[in-house]
Length: 95
Image 1 (cartoon, rainbow, N blue to C red):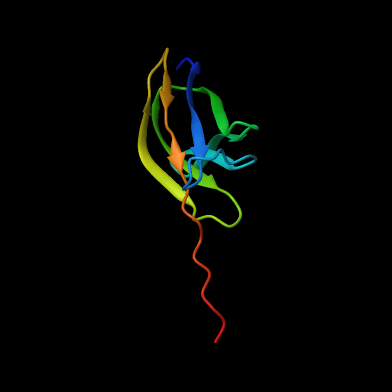
Image 2 (image 1 turned 135 degrees about the vertical axis):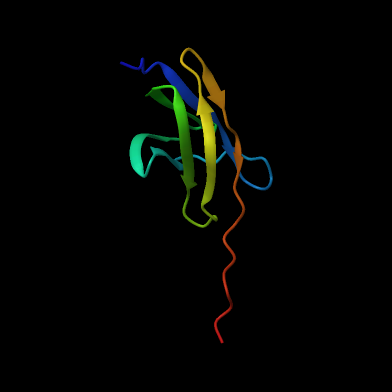
């Protein structure tokens, strides 16, 4: 049985390097959600416990483009640091 004591953690900021508060972080493997987190006041998040393996990390926040990173490797005893810098969603002007 795989030990689930790894984690994915990091900081989520905007294009000005300001922390994004309450951004949603979802960790999936094989299309199945394995964990989720919401960023704190400083933009930090941590998703744990995670079994060793390969994951896809999706970050979403209103007004910003969704960011997806595939192939994130988590080791048995370790944490994997993954920082995000979100880009503002482009709003098309009305005709």
